[in-house]
Length: 291
Image (cartoon, rainbow, N blue to C red; front, side):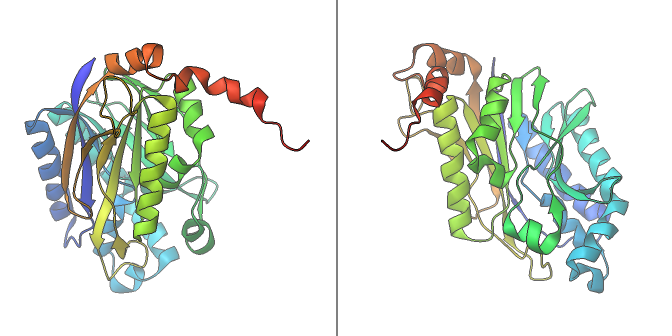
């Protein structure tokens, strides 16, 4: 299986209406589809631009805006579902702070198929901002999506820095890992990049990073956003020596495109210069500390 993927450095914005926000998203999806992309990735908390549609008091209220945004969530999901169907693409929507029946909010990214089917991945491990200031909680466990493009896992931002989470997805068959991110400092962007490249190396698979970029002074949640869209691979036979298949300019909005060839994943896991994927279990019996 070989196809073109597109991962977005997507700008936070200040829409004046729902229609304006929807039209901008549609323009992005249309552009990637026209280029031939079959898998599109949007970043963590891309949905937070919708908070600009709230009144000024709610915009500056971290807790209040979470509740107010729930009135838009079904329209948000339906928009992405319809775009996936219209353009015949697999589309990871920008994650949304989703209210559960028990009153908790989770950071949820919806994965939309061209068939109209949808499923979601929740973030597992919250950053200090999410848990200490924003009251976002861990959601449902990691999963893998079976698609016509292959088996795909999603690890939202900070989650990619925890190898056992993504290893579970890979052991469940994931050949492609999607990492939507939202970081407000260069150090955070580098942590995501390093984590993504490490996961590509140890699991010998593709990892696509999609960051939120730009500034929104009106938002206490996504006021500053930095990052670099990229497609990472194992630095091994059949892939780039530096493990970078494609990479955009830092903090610059736009799509980054790259070919995904799952035959190369299978090949490197079977006959690479090293066999990290196969040799992973060997470390478990060799962790002996002390005398």
